[in-house]
Image 1 (spheres, protein in one colour):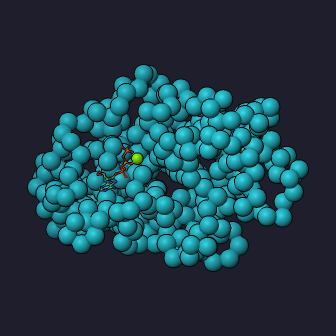
Image 2 (image 1 turned 90 degrees about the vertical axis):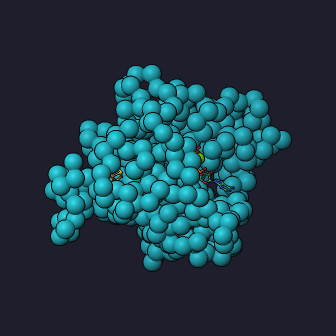
Image 3 (image 1 turned 180 degrees about the vertical axis):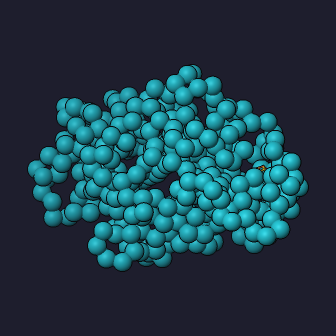
Length: 342
Ligand code: ATP
Ligand code: SF4
Ligand code: MG
Protein backbone atom coordinates (compact mmCIF):
# COMPACT_ATOMS: atom_id res chain seq x y z
CA UNK A 1 0.00 0.00 0.00
CA UNK A 2 3.07 2.21 -0.13
CA UNK A 3 4.02 2.07 -3.81
CA UNK A 4 7.51 2.92 -4.99
CA UNK A 5 7.04 2.02 -8.66
CA UNK A 6 3.67 2.02 -10.39
CA UNK A 7 3.51 0.68 -13.92
CA UNK A 8 0.28 1.76 -15.60
CA UNK A 9 -0.97 0.54 -18.96
CA UNK A 10 2.52 -0.14 -20.26
CA UNK A 11 2.77 -1.18 -23.90
CA UNK A 12 5.94 -2.18 -25.67
CA UNK A 13 6.18 -2.95 -29.38
CA UNK A 14 8.98 -4.26 -31.52
CA UNK A 15 8.88 -2.39 -34.82
CA UNK A 16 6.49 0.23 -36.10
CA UNK A 17 3.21 0.35 -38.00
CA UNK A 18 2.10 -2.85 -39.71
CA UNK A 19 5.32 -4.56 -38.72
CA UNK A 20 4.85 -3.91 -35.02
CA UNK A 21 4.69 -6.85 -32.67
CA UNK A 22 3.24 -6.05 -29.25
CA UNK A 23 5.32 -7.83 -26.63
CA UNK A 24 3.99 -6.05 -23.53
CA UNK A 25 0.25 -5.41 -23.46
CA UNK A 26 -1.32 -2.89 -21.09
CA UNK A 27 0.60 -4.02 -18.05
CA UNK A 28 -0.40 -2.63 -14.66
CA UNK A 29 1.99 -3.65 -11.92
CA UNK A 30 2.89 -2.02 -8.61
CA UNK A 31 6.08 -2.55 -6.67
CA UNK A 32 5.69 -1.65 -3.01
CA UNK A 33 8.41 -0.07 -0.90
CA UNK A 34 10.76 -2.71 0.51
CA UNK A 35 9.09 -5.76 -1.03
CA UNK A 36 10.50 -8.53 -3.20
CA UNK A 37 8.17 -8.94 -6.17
CA UNK A 38 8.86 -11.95 -8.36
CA UNK A 39 7.90 -11.96 -12.03
CA UNK A 40 7.68 -15.34 -13.73
CA UNK A 41 6.47 -16.74 -17.02
CA UNK A 42 7.63 -18.93 -19.85
CA UNK A 43 10.32 -17.85 -22.26
CA UNK A 44 8.98 -15.15 -24.58
CA UNK A 45 6.21 -14.00 -22.25
CA UNK A 46 7.67 -10.48 -22.20
CA UNK A 47 9.44 -10.31 -18.84
CA UNK A 48 12.67 -8.77 -20.10
CA UNK A 49 10.80 -6.51 -22.51
CA UNK A 50 8.82 -5.18 -19.55
CA UNK A 51 12.00 -4.57 -17.53
CA UNK A 52 13.82 -2.88 -20.42
CA UNK A 53 10.75 -0.84 -21.29
CA UNK A 54 10.13 0.49 -17.81
CA UNK A 55 13.78 1.48 -17.36
CA UNK A 56 14.02 2.99 -20.85
CA UNK A 57 16.82 0.63 -21.82
CA UNK A 58 14.91 -0.98 -24.66
CA UNK A 59 17.17 -1.68 -27.63
CA UNK A 60 15.74 -0.87 -31.09
CA UNK A 61 13.43 -1.84 -32.71
CA UNK A 62 11.70 -1.85 -29.31
CA UNK A 63 9.48 1.14 -28.51
CA UNK A 64 7.33 1.96 -25.51
CA UNK A 65 4.07 2.88 -27.20
CA UNK A 66 1.96 3.70 -24.18
CA UNK A 67 1.57 3.89 -20.45
CA UNK A 68 3.24 5.41 -17.43
CA UNK A 69 5.94 4.34 -15.02
CA UNK A 70 5.49 6.38 -11.86
CA UNK A 71 8.40 6.41 -9.45
CA UNK A 72 7.27 7.63 -6.04
CA UNK A 73 10.09 9.46 -4.31
CA UNK A 74 10.24 9.61 -0.53
CA UNK A 75 10.14 13.39 -0.75
CA UNK A 76 8.41 15.18 -3.59
CA UNK A 77 5.87 14.23 -6.22
CA UNK A 78 6.14 11.06 -8.31
CA UNK A 79 7.97 11.23 -11.63
CA UNK A 80 6.98 9.41 -14.81
CA UNK A 81 10.16 7.63 -15.86
CA UNK A 82 8.88 7.58 -19.44
CA UNK A 83 9.01 11.37 -19.62
CA UNK A 84 12.49 11.92 -18.15
CA UNK A 85 15.00 13.69 -20.39
CA UNK A 86 18.24 11.86 -21.20
CA UNK A 87 20.08 13.88 -18.55
CA UNK A 88 17.41 13.20 -15.93
CA UNK A 89 17.51 9.56 -16.88
CA UNK A 90 21.26 9.37 -16.30
CA UNK A 91 20.79 10.82 -12.83
CA UNK A 92 17.87 8.49 -12.17
CA UNK A 93 19.60 5.25 -13.10
CA UNK A 94 21.71 3.63 -10.37
CA UNK A 95 20.66 6.33 -7.89
CA UNK A 96 16.91 5.65 -7.81
CA UNK A 97 16.50 2.42 -9.76
CA UNK A 98 19.27 0.08 -10.72
CA UNK A 99 19.12 -2.89 -12.98
CA UNK A 100 21.09 -6.09 -13.10
CA UNK A 101 20.31 -7.64 -16.46
CA UNK A 102 20.47 -11.08 -17.96
CA UNK A 103 24.13 -11.73 -18.59
CA UNK A 104 25.13 -8.68 -16.57
CA UNK A 105 27.98 -10.55 -14.99
CA UNK A 106 29.59 -10.49 -18.41
CA UNK A 107 29.07 -6.77 -18.70
CA UNK A 108 31.85 -5.92 -16.25
CA UNK A 109 34.69 -4.32 -18.15
CA UNK A 110 37.41 -6.99 -18.42
CA UNK A 111 40.29 -4.48 -18.49
CA UNK A 112 39.36 -2.66 -15.27
CA UNK A 113 39.69 -3.81 -11.70
CA UNK A 114 36.52 -4.38 -9.73
CA UNK A 115 37.41 -1.42 -7.51
CA UNK A 116 37.71 0.94 -10.49
CA UNK A 117 34.28 -0.05 -11.75
CA UNK A 118 32.68 0.50 -8.35
CA UNK A 119 34.45 3.86 -8.01
CA UNK A 120 33.22 4.96 -11.44
CA UNK A 121 29.58 4.42 -10.53
CA UNK A 122 29.99 6.38 -7.30
CA UNK A 123 32.04 9.18 -8.88
CA UNK A 124 29.62 9.65 -11.79
CA UNK A 125 26.82 10.47 -9.40
CA UNK A 126 28.81 11.99 -6.54
CA UNK A 127 31.56 14.01 -8.21
CA UNK A 128 32.54 15.58 -4.87
CA UNK A 129 33.32 12.26 -3.20
CA UNK A 130 36.96 11.69 -2.28
CA UNK A 131 39.10 8.84 -3.53
CA UNK A 132 39.53 7.47 -0.01
CA UNK A 133 35.81 7.79 0.58
CA UNK A 134 34.99 5.89 -2.59
CA UNK A 135 37.48 3.17 -1.74
CA UNK A 136 35.94 2.68 1.69
CA UNK A 137 32.46 2.57 0.13
CA UNK A 138 33.61 0.00 -2.43
CA UNK A 139 35.05 -2.17 0.34
CA UNK A 140 31.82 -1.95 2.35
CA UNK A 141 29.75 -2.80 -0.71
CA UNK A 142 31.78 -5.92 -1.46
CA UNK A 143 31.53 -6.99 2.15
CA UNK A 144 27.77 -6.49 1.94
CA UNK A 145 27.52 -9.03 -0.86
CA UNK A 146 29.88 -11.43 0.87
CA UNK A 147 33.09 -10.76 -1.03
CA UNK A 148 36.23 -10.08 0.99
CA UNK A 149 37.87 -6.69 0.52
CA UNK A 150 41.07 -8.27 -0.83
CA UNK A 151 39.13 -8.92 -4.04
CA UNK A 152 38.87 -5.18 -4.70
CA UNK A 153 41.92 -5.20 -6.90
CA UNK A 154 40.90 -8.28 -8.86
CA UNK A 155 40.03 -8.19 -12.53
CA UNK A 156 36.67 -9.71 -13.52
CA UNK A 157 38.26 -12.82 -15.08
CA UNK A 158 39.85 -13.62 -11.73
CA UNK A 159 36.41 -14.02 -10.17
CA UNK A 160 33.92 -16.85 -10.50
CA UNK A 161 30.59 -16.26 -12.28
CA UNK A 162 28.79 -16.06 -8.98
CA UNK A 163 31.26 -13.51 -7.62
CA UNK A 164 30.94 -11.37 -10.75
CA UNK A 165 27.19 -11.45 -10.34
CA UNK A 166 27.58 -10.33 -6.74
CA UNK A 167 29.90 -7.52 -7.84
CA UNK A 168 27.09 -6.39 -10.15
CA UNK A 169 24.71 -6.43 -7.20
CA UNK A 170 27.21 -4.40 -5.18
CA UNK A 171 27.30 -1.86 -8.02
CA UNK A 172 23.52 -1.84 -8.20
CA UNK A 173 23.38 -1.02 -4.47
CA UNK A 174 26.21 1.53 -4.52
CA UNK A 175 23.98 4.60 -4.59
CA UNK A 176 21.30 3.17 -2.31
CA UNK A 177 18.46 3.07 -4.83
CA UNK A 178 14.91 2.38 -3.68
CA UNK A 179 14.39 -0.11 -6.50
CA UNK A 180 16.61 -2.92 -7.74
CA UNK A 181 15.51 -4.86 -10.80
CA UNK A 182 17.14 -8.17 -11.50
CA UNK A 183 16.57 -10.12 -14.68
CA UNK A 184 18.09 -13.43 -13.76
CA UNK A 185 20.01 -15.39 -16.33
CA UNK A 186 18.66 -18.90 -16.46
CA UNK A 187 21.58 -20.63 -18.01
CA UNK A 188 24.67 -18.67 -17.03
CA UNK A 189 24.46 -19.45 -13.34
CA UNK A 190 23.78 -22.79 -11.84
CA UNK A 191 20.70 -23.40 -9.76
CA UNK A 192 22.53 -23.28 -6.43
CA UNK A 193 24.04 -19.91 -7.32
CA UNK A 194 20.68 -18.47 -8.33
CA UNK A 195 19.21 -19.45 -4.98
CA UNK A 196 22.13 -17.91 -3.13
CA UNK A 197 21.86 -14.65 -5.02
CA UNK A 198 18.13 -14.24 -4.62
CA UNK A 199 18.40 -15.25 -0.97
CA UNK A 200 21.12 -12.70 -0.44
CA UNK A 201 19.18 -9.98 -2.23
CA UNK A 202 16.11 -10.66 -0.08
CA UNK A 203 18.33 -10.49 3.01
CA UNK A 204 20.00 -7.24 1.94
CA UNK A 205 16.71 -5.53 1.29
CA UNK A 206 15.72 -6.33 4.88
CA UNK A 207 18.84 -4.49 5.97
CA UNK A 208 18.71 -1.63 3.47
CA UNK A 209 15.01 -1.32 2.67
CA UNK A 210 15.05 -1.24 -1.14
CA UNK A 211 12.39 -3.02 -3.21
CA UNK A 212 13.29 -5.80 -5.63
CA UNK A 213 11.71 -6.84 -8.91
CA UNK A 214 13.17 -10.27 -9.57
CA UNK A 215 12.55 -11.87 -12.95
CA UNK A 216 13.00 -15.56 -13.58
CA UNK A 217 11.55 -18.65 -15.28
CA UNK A 218 11.80 -20.39 -12.00
CA UNK A 219 8.64 -20.08 -10.00
CA UNK A 220 9.91 -22.37 -7.23
CA UNK A 221 12.70 -19.89 -6.49
CA UNK A 222 10.16 -17.08 -6.18
CA UNK A 223 7.86 -19.03 -3.93
CA UNK A 224 10.72 -19.27 -1.49
CA UNK A 225 12.10 -15.75 -1.58
CA UNK A 226 9.50 -13.25 -2.72
CA UNK A 227 6.71 -11.50 -0.90
CA UNK A 228 4.47 -11.35 -3.94
CA UNK A 229 4.50 -13.00 -7.33
CA UNK A 230 3.21 -11.81 -10.69
CA UNK A 231 2.75 -14.20 -13.60
CA UNK A 232 3.10 -13.12 -17.22
CA UNK A 233 1.63 -14.74 -20.31
CA UNK A 234 1.61 -13.40 -23.86
CA UNK A 235 2.71 -9.94 -22.73
CA UNK A 236 0.11 -9.58 -19.99
CA UNK A 237 0.05 -10.08 -16.25
CA UNK A 238 -2.43 -12.91 -15.72
CA UNK A 239 -2.14 -13.43 -11.98
CA UNK A 240 -0.72 -11.62 -9.00
CA UNK A 241 -0.78 -12.68 -5.36
CA UNK A 242 1.19 -12.92 -2.12
CA UNK A 243 3.69 -15.76 -2.64
CA UNK A 244 2.18 -18.13 -0.07
CA UNK A 245 -1.34 -17.70 -1.46
CA UNK A 246 -0.20 -18.24 -5.00
CA UNK A 247 1.68 -21.36 -4.07
CA UNK A 248 -1.13 -22.62 -1.86
CA UNK A 249 -3.80 -22.15 -4.50
CA UNK A 250 -3.19 -20.80 -7.97
CA UNK A 251 -6.30 -19.22 -9.47
CA UNK A 252 -5.18 -18.98 -13.09
CA UNK A 253 -4.86 -22.30 -14.94
CA UNK A 254 -1.56 -21.09 -16.44
CA UNK A 255 -0.11 -20.44 -12.97
CA UNK A 256 -1.35 -23.85 -11.95
CA UNK A 257 0.48 -25.32 -14.94
CA UNK A 258 3.67 -23.50 -14.02
CA UNK A 259 3.46 -24.68 -10.42
CA UNK A 260 3.00 -28.25 -11.51
CA UNK A 261 5.69 -28.18 -14.13
CA UNK A 262 8.25 -28.77 -11.41
CA UNK A 263 7.92 -31.54 -8.90
CA UNK A 264 8.30 -29.93 -5.49
CA UNK A 265 9.35 -26.78 -3.73
CA UNK A 266 12.61 -28.21 -2.51
CA UNK A 267 13.00 -31.01 -5.01
CA UNK A 268 15.14 -30.99 -8.13
CA UNK A 269 14.07 -28.31 -10.54
CA UNK A 270 13.73 -28.28 -14.28
CA UNK A 271 12.71 -25.90 -17.04
CA UNK A 272 9.07 -24.93 -17.29
CA UNK A 273 8.21 -27.25 -20.10
CA UNK A 274 5.36 -28.96 -18.35
CA UNK A 275 2.45 -27.12 -20.00
CA UNK A 276 1.33 -28.75 -23.24
CA UNK A 277 1.24 -26.55 -26.31
CA UNK A 278 3.40 -23.54 -27.05
CA UNK A 279 3.39 -19.85 -26.13
CA UNK A 280 1.19 -17.64 -28.32
CA UNK A 281 2.43 -16.16 -31.57
CA UNK A 282 2.51 -12.41 -30.92
CA UNK A 283 1.65 -11.78 -34.59
CA UNK A 284 -1.48 -13.88 -34.36
CA UNK A 285 -2.72 -13.73 -30.79
CA UNK A 286 -5.65 -16.01 -29.97
CA UNK A 287 -8.94 -14.17 -29.48
CA UNK A 288 -10.31 -13.71 -25.97
CA UNK A 289 -8.02 -15.19 -23.35
CA UNK A 290 -4.63 -15.77 -25.01
CA UNK A 291 -4.21 -18.97 -23.00
CA UNK A 292 -7.41 -20.61 -24.27
CA UNK A 293 -5.80 -22.90 -26.89
CA UNK A 294 -3.75 -24.50 -24.12
CA UNK A 295 -6.13 -24.20 -21.21
CA UNK A 296 -7.54 -27.44 -19.80
CA UNK A 297 -10.46 -25.51 -18.32
CA UNK A 298 -11.39 -23.27 -21.25
CA UNK A 299 -15.13 -22.73 -21.76
CA UNK A 300 -17.21 -20.72 -24.21
CA UNK A 301 -16.53 -17.12 -23.04
CA UNK A 302 -12.76 -17.63 -23.10
CA UNK A 303 -12.65 -17.56 -26.89
CA UNK A 304 -14.71 -14.41 -27.22
CA UNK A 305 -13.65 -11.94 -24.61
CA UNK A 306 -10.41 -10.94 -22.92
CA UNK A 307 -10.70 -11.50 -19.16
CA UNK A 308 -9.66 -8.36 -17.25
CA UNK A 309 -7.07 -8.55 -14.46
CA UNK A 310 -8.70 -7.83 -11.13
CA UNK A 311 -9.42 -9.10 -7.63
CA UNK A 312 -11.73 -12.09 -7.88
CA UNK A 313 -15.06 -11.97 -6.10
CA UNK A 314 -15.10 -13.47 -2.60
CA UNK A 315 -11.37 -13.84 -2.39
CA UNK A 316 -8.35 -12.14 -0.87
CA UNK A 317 -8.36 -8.54 -2.16
CA UNK A 318 -4.55 -8.71 -2.45
CA UNK A 319 -4.96 -11.21 -5.25
CA UNK A 320 -5.67 -10.41 -8.86
CA UNK A 321 -6.38 -12.75 -11.75
CA UNK A 322 -7.37 -12.48 -15.40
CA UNK A 323 -9.54 -15.53 -15.99
CA UNK A 324 -13.26 -16.08 -16.62
CA UNK A 325 -13.27 -18.83 -13.99
CA UNK A 326 -12.80 -16.06 -11.42
CA UNK A 327 -14.86 -13.05 -12.49
CA UNK A 328 -13.87 -9.78 -10.91
CA UNK A 329 -15.73 -8.26 -8.00
CA UNK A 330 -19.46 -8.78 -8.29
CA UNK A 331 -19.78 -10.64 -11.57
CA UNK A 332 -21.53 -8.41 -14.08
CA UNK A 333 -25.17 -9.31 -14.78
CA UNK A 334 -25.33 -11.87 -17.51
CA UNK A 335 -21.63 -12.55 -17.12
CA UNK A 336 -21.16 -16.28 -17.64
CA UNK A 337 -19.85 -18.16 -14.64
CA UNK A 338 -18.06 -21.49 -14.62
CA UNK A 339 -21.18 -23.21 -13.33
CA UNK A 340 -23.17 -21.90 -16.31
CA UNK A 341 -20.51 -23.20 -18.65
CA UNK A 342 -18.90 -26.28 -17.17
P1 ATP B 1 13.07 -15.28 -21.48
O1 ATP B 1 12.51 -15.98 -20.28
O2 ATP B 1 13.48 -16.23 -22.54
O3 ATP B 1 14.12 -14.29 -21.14
P2 ATP B 1 11.16 -13.11 -21.73
O4 ATP B 1 9.91 -13.38 -20.98
O5 ATP B 1 12.17 -12.22 -21.13
O6 ATP B 1 11.80 -14.51 -22.15
P3 ATP B 1 11.24 -11.27 -23.95
O7 ATP B 1 12.67 -11.42 -24.22
O8 ATP B 1 10.78 -10.04 -23.26
O9 ATP B 1 10.68 -12.53 -23.15
O10 ATP B 1 10.46 -11.42 -25.33
C1 ATP B 1 9.08 -11.17 -25.44
C2 ATP B 1 8.65 -11.31 -26.86
O11 ATP B 1 9.20 -10.26 -27.64
C3 ATP B 1 9.10 -12.62 -27.52
O12 ATP B 1 8.03 -13.15 -28.26
C4 ATP B 1 10.22 -12.20 -28.42
O13 ATP B 1 10.25 -13.02 -29.57
C5 ATP B 1 9.85 -10.78 -28.79
N1 ATP B 1 11.07 -10.01 -29.06
C6 ATP B 1 12.10 -9.79 -28.22
N2 ATP B 1 13.05 -9.01 -28.80
C7 ATP B 1 12.60 -8.75 -30.04
C8 ATP B 1 13.10 -8.01 -31.15
N3 ATP B 1 14.27 -7.37 -31.08
N4 ATP B 1 12.35 -7.97 -32.27
C9 ATP B 1 11.16 -8.60 -32.35
N5 ATP B 1 10.64 -9.30 -31.34
C10 ATP B 1 11.32 -9.38 -30.21
FE1 SF4 C 1 -8.55 -20.82 -19.19
FE2 SF4 C 1 -10.67 -19.38 -19.84
FE3 SF4 C 1 -9.35 -18.81 -17.63
FE4 SF4 C 1 -8.28 -18.29 -20.00
S1 SF4 C 1 -10.12 -17.36 -19.14
S2 SF4 C 1 -7.26 -19.22 -18.29
S3 SF4 C 1 -9.01 -20.02 -21.21
S4 SF4 C 1 -10.46 -20.70 -18.07
MG1 MG D 1 14.13 -12.48 -20.60
